[in-house]
Every structure is written in structure tokens, then in C-alpha cells.
Length: 295
Image (cartoon, rainbow, N blue to C red):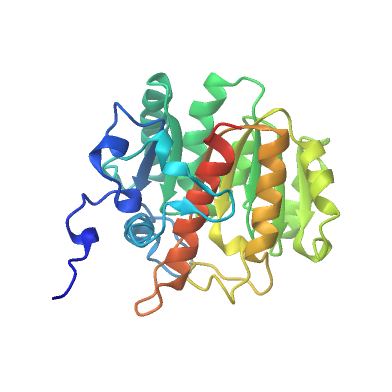
């Protein structure tokens, strides 16, 4: 007799977690899906990213083999997808208000994109709680344009908007315009840049960590990964980080800093290739464990 698949019977939540660990009241961590990609400049589809990550997470083992621990024991609730408006500035403001409410409710917030433009709203909310916040921006692109396609809240401007609020350390960049380089050089150290070409060994990690303050928000564009393991992104670039390099850096970060929140953005699911969705889901789960579990 065939065994019933339990994933069909659990609620549609991150990790297919049962109510005793996924209710809002019980959970320490709140996952907020934002299916928005109105300013995507190359390949659309990031609006489908949050649902694909949650769907893939329902096939993960909740026991983490590396930590020999179940990170879901702290409680992880999955909120409904945010309602979308077709205006990037207004969307960032909606994200800000939603994240601020979750922080006021003493939740650790994980934002799932959607395109990267949504991250500025989450950073703003965390900055209000942590006035000395610094942001770690992990991305193939600098995202430092002041305006793109006549829009200051375009996904290609998100790091620029964040750097106007607080110091920023950008890691993994391998696509950058001359105007962005000039702006970073004129920032007087407020913006630190670590190019992918200089990251072929792990010596850069300590320098990046030193550039961050104690309280850190992490924003990850999945195109930071090498395209061989993460082809499902809207604006792919050759080269990039591998899985274990990313995890090594995240563990070092967790050991030395107070990570107050994070987001994972820009997954553009590819029909028939679910491996990138699983990578994104496992990354989210690993980071919940690294950053929010009891040390």
C-alpha cells in the first residue's frame, strides 16, 4: 500500500511545519513573501520566487546535518503574500510598514522576493530599531545607480537607496557601471566594495567583516551565486560564489555580528529545473539557523 505524502496535508508554509511550530503566536521567526517584480530589467518572473522557495522548503529535512539541530524548533511562521502595487516607491513603503509591524511584535523577519527593490523598505524598518545598523549587500551587481529607467526605486538602485540610510558593504560584485564606481569612490568609506575577481580565496572575508558594525542586516540577490548552481535569476552574470563559500562567510558573520534580519531575492523559477529553488530554500533555512538560533 502506498504511503501518503505528508506534504499534501500540512499547511502551505515554509518547511511544511505543523501549527505547533508555525503559528504566529508561537514563532520567533516570521517569513514575509513579497511577489513583486515590476521594475525587472531583463527577465521577469521574480514575482514567482517566494512561492517557489516555500514550495521547495516543504521537501527539506528540518534536521540540519551540519549543526545536528532542528532550526524550526524556535518557531517559523509563514505570512500571506503581500498585496502588490505597481509603483516601486510605494511598494518599498508598504514593505517598510509591514516589517516594522513585525519587529514591533518581537519577530525576526525574513523577507522573500521578488525583485531586489523591496529590500530598502525592510532595511528602513530595521534601522528604526537599530540606529547603528550596517547592511551587508551580496549581489552580482552593484545596484548603485541613482536612477534607472527613470525610477529611483528600480531594482538596480536598491544599494544606492540603502547606502543613503546607513553604511553598506557590497560583496560579490562582477557587473558595475563607471558611474557606480565613481559614486562608491566618493562615498568616503561609507560604501565598501568587494569585487568577485578578488574573492577567489577566502582572505577577503575578514576584511568584509571588519567593515561591518555590530548590528547587521543581510540582503542577498541570488545572482551572487555562480550561474552553474543558480541559473534561475533575472539578470545572470558569469562567475560568482559557490554554496560552501557562501555558507562559510555566513557562519563567520553569525559568529562575530548580531544579524537582526535578512532577505533573499531575485529567484526567477525555471520550469523543469527545481534545483535552484531548493538551493534558495535551504539557504533561507540555514540562515535562520545561523542567525537566529540560540548560540
